[in-house]
Amino acid sequence: MQMSIEYKKEISYVLKIGSACTRVLRYVAFTLVLFSLLAGCGKKPLPPAQADYAEQAIQLNFMASSKLNLHDGKAHALVLCVYQLSDPGVFVDTLETPDGLDNLLVCEAFDPTVRSRKRIVLDRPGGNKRLTLNRMEGTRYIGIVAGYYDRQEGPCSKVIPVPVVEKRTGFLWLKKTRYLEVEDATIFFGAKGKVVSVPVVEKRTGFLWLKKTRYLDIKDTTISQEAKGMEVQ
Image 1 (cartoon, rainbow, N blue to C red):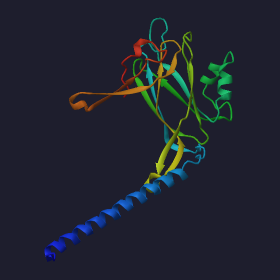
Image 2: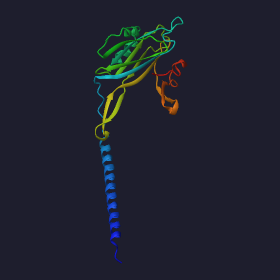
Image 3: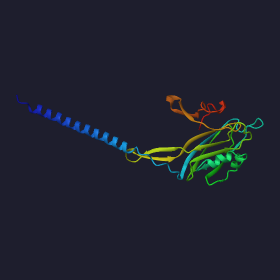
Image 4: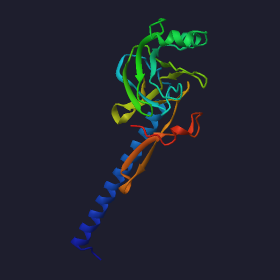
């Protein structure tokens, strides 16, 4: 029985579709193999992050207790010095000397490891202050000292390593770059000499959970309950 012309056309059309699908599947398989090979090649260790100069690469959020720097039953302003350090060794050694904290509060470049320093005053108990700094070349640590009246709770200082951030760039985001950046470190200053780095958590509230609220997560810290629920601006 001879096939009609229409039937032959239908068979030809189906064969063409099948051929096209086969080409697509082959392309997908080739792409997957290529990605696997590229991923395997990308497993070599990345070079260490360079501590180059970078503008606005350090962002600190200072939060103050409502009883900040408590003295004679009253809250007071608190003077800080924020150091950028290439190495924390001399900074830490100085803190361990009898007058070390007072010497560091002078806020001077006391050693070549000090890349920069800045004096800050927290003048609103219960409030917060954001500080954005250009990261000086060679900076790998942030050192903070606080001039409390009463230092019995301690410590009155904090050393924060500048974290290494990994970013993907280039074709198909296959290139990895490592760099140093303090994106949003939050430091809580208590009543009597307590300086603590505190995680910040984000909570969604309101209509359709569109409102975002950021607050201190103190469950794994040693700071007092008065910081519970403090919002981070």
